[in-house]
Structures are given as C-alpha cells and as structure tokens.
Length: 241
DNA sequence: TCATTAAATTGTT
DNA sequence: AACAATTTAATGA
Image (tube, rainbow, N blue to C red; front, side, top):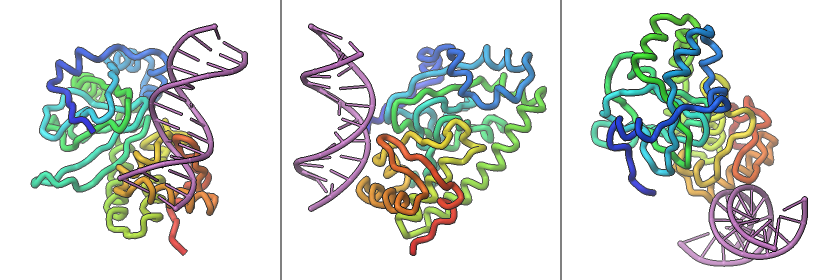
C-alpha cells in the first residue's frame, strides 16, 4: 500500500472542490440546522477525492477541518507514544470525526487512511466554531456523536481482546453498521473481505470463513463487494457454539 | 443495447 | 499463497 499523504493543508485545499447537491445529501448533520445555518455550512463545505492508501489526516497535524466521509471507506488508527498501532476502527459513509480535537483546537490524535478511493468532506474550524456557538441542532448532533463514539471505542477494546475470529468479525461488523454514527450505511455495507481483514486484523481467508459462518446463522448475507445485515442485534450478541 | 474483454472480488485448497 | 470461478465495469460496434 502506498504511503502518500497530504503534505499540507494547502494541498488539501487545492484538490478540493464544492460538493454537488447529491453529495450534500450525504452529510447527515445538515438536516439538523436551520435553513440559514445550513446555507452558511454548505457554502464552507469542501469535498476531495482520497486515493487508496492516502492519509486524510495524521497525528500531530494542526487541525484545519472537521472531516466526514461521504462515500468510500476509511481506516482510523490511534497510535501509542511508541508508534505502535493500538486501535483500528472502520469509518463508513456518513461518519464524521475529529470533533474532539476541533473543539479543543488541538492537533489530530488519529491517523485516517483511505482503504479505497473515497470522497471526504470537511468544514473549516471557524465554521465549526460558529455552528457550535449558534446552532442547537448542531450541538445536539455533536453531543450524541461524542457519546456514541465513546461507547464504540470501549467496544473496540473489547473486540481486540476477543480471540475467536468469528466473534471479532461479527462485533466489528456490528460497530460498522452503527445507525447513529454511520447513518449513511443503510443495511448494505460496501466493504470487500480484504478490507474487512485489514480492519479486523485477520487474513482474507479467515474473514471469508467467518462471514459464511455468520451467513449460515442468518445474521448477514454475503454479497459481491459488500455485506448485508439481516440481524444487527444478533451480530452484537453472537457467540460461538 | 449487446457482446467482448479486462479488472476486481470471491471461494477453495 | 496460489488458483479457478464469479461478478462487475469498461469498451466499442
């Protein structure tokens, strides 16, 4: 996988463009704003295409945007002081991230890398601050987002401790289908078995085996280039027999 | 629109 | 890790 990264905020800016109307509909929090607020936010919104392997943001970089995913798939990793990857989280369409660091005006604490060609959206920090100061709906969205993400990170730590590969795949899928954090996913998640392997830390073969085990229990349906969830609760509760 | 070909993804060993 | 089978995407008549 290539090690491209954005050399600076200006590089990101140069490659970005204004979103189309269809792309705007993929931004879940716009609907929580008043028409006036939404107009301001939409005017500031930029989108850019991230290539596979490309870093959207890196640890330590100054924050210039609050970012979200419209289409594609990102991998979020958190590194310890020693540079050892600690937790991985998949980031499907509809997910927005970095609000914690944007709020505090601190450098990014995560690496965000595109697993495949992805369309990333962002608003500038001043606009983010403006919405926080002004919009009740936006604050509600952010508060719920922070709360849900905290729960997700706790779940991710538990998943890392699990030994049974089938359970790990089941729980990881369940967190990728989180309806509040990732409203853009729907019931069909576009992810290849290879990509899922990267996220869960398993070989593609083992992921394939786990997926058809889960399919055998009517929890999911394996499709070409994606997974359809039939029973989200069942995935969360899944235990090997 | 259809047929052909290449590329991506899956299923199996 | 390798291979065959399947699905999708792209191309051009």
